[in-house]
Length: 276
Image (tube, helix red, strand yellow):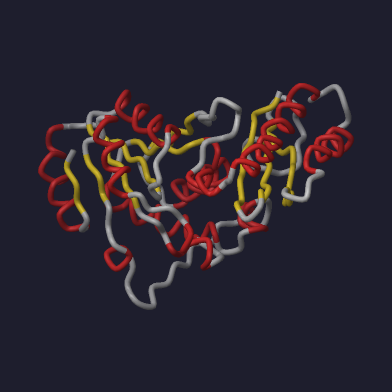
């Protein structure tokens, strides 16, 4: 695996191989890799000739400074996992390499910036789109791979790609779960044993909704599912059923998704499940 930490060196290498008509896949990450990330590497390797993973803890998408400081950064372990997974290139820049002083980003995210994650994490998607646009225009991949767990983020990036007319095919890959059902996340390492047990209520509530979707009225179904969060360690932010394409209130039972965000102790987790 080749490793680059400057844009100049990465671009120079990519320019040297572009004439070979290779399909390039990009897997953008913030590191602290787990099986979910590695499944994206596998998906890229299946579809592309050259797979690039980026590891960059992007400061502009954190709306809480404390969350940024606590974000795990096991870079040596991440490199070993990428090597083992057969990743071809790692791009691991410093913040100063990706951002200049007083840099401004004026892209308007739109309605997705005001609901669900956008509502509870103001400014988050401005930061996400800023760094993803930088990576897309730097690497110029044919494909980019993202996990379904961050489903709203995938929709936001899809809109970004359309807005700037970027010739990149986006791939949403299935959520990878731990054996007990908890959606894999870099944040899971911050859960103690009791918190991990309590966090399973996210998965259980989603399964309950999926099992009863179409059998109960929407509001009644959601109210029953919220009963899974009656615990002092759980602070439910939202549990919503929405249209898969827009995240607006559903008007078609066949194209729905249920999404949840909940803090377990001091760790914020998200999850979702397609319906029915």
